[in-house]
Length: 261
Ligand SMILES: [Zn+2]
Image 1: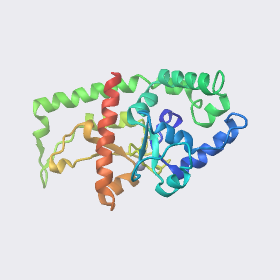
Image 2 (image 1 turned 135 degrees about the vertical axis):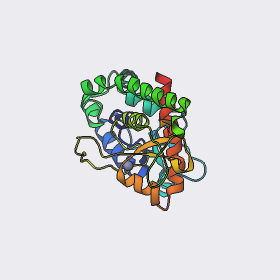
Image 3 (image 1 turned 90 degrees about the vertical axis):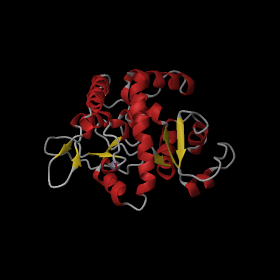
């Protein structure tokens, strides 16, 4: 949830999650309970809230001894897209989720220290003020894109030494709004901390399916990427796999924002 609230990458590799979770469990777990970071990761994977990705074969039960399987497969894990988007864009949803976790697992409320550690207390008011405005902006920009599509604007060409499709500035802006300033690759290993000359995050908006091949010029198939992820998508050995993942991510984020409109 902290990752969603701060729009950090949605998925994290088991080997990283393991250490992060163990630390938190050591500090905030029930007294006398065992350190079993594998338990939430695998138990949640049986629900619609959570995803495990990149493994082969069936996911073992959380009980028993699934750690060797996790260590060997090192799947990526995290909230499902719809849950991530809901928690990223709605402070109300986060508050409700925190309250029910507190009632169920902490005998009342989640300790403030734990909330701060996972990034759920850092900038409450900033998060609140950006919760509904970007959603409206995203939808008005998408309407602009769709109105231009209906007019046939996307078939227009600019005249230059070679013919290129006209790109919609509204579509690019919409994707940047939706990204919340973070690379939208769910497997991003970290984007530059620096900002550009206008003080904006260093992100490049890209069509998942190339405009050259007449992919639609619409946020539903566009994605904001940091320079590293953009390079992997363009010329990495795993680019085909990443492209498929990004297409799903762009569609899922687009429809997650639609669901709340
Ligand atoms: Zn990235």
